[in-house]
Length: 152
Image (cartoon, rainbow, N blue to C red):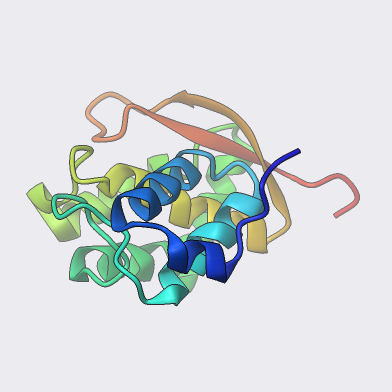
């Protein structure tokens, strides 16, 4: 049986333990529980990121959030899902254009972008499909595909 993560347990963790939990949840954004735990960690206001990684307070992440959540970009993400492509494949070029070299895998930028895309699509009643390779020249190597939940 899995251990229930609560705000009190998050508060009792060391920064390193919170960073590990945060990183593990970011790698498993294929379920809504992981998204919920990430939000709980962020909402706690406690430190949770190693210094080299992007975190929710960074301007780079805010730029990625604005791109992913822009109404004009939703149609492109939905079009990608209709063709079995990862929605990140149509969003990442916009992120790269805005952030240039600040969008990288080594600082968690690609993982955060994937997380934000997943969070957006979960809100639109999609579920995660298999991960596939990103197009040549992409910063991220692979990204999740999505499909509409049955019955929606």
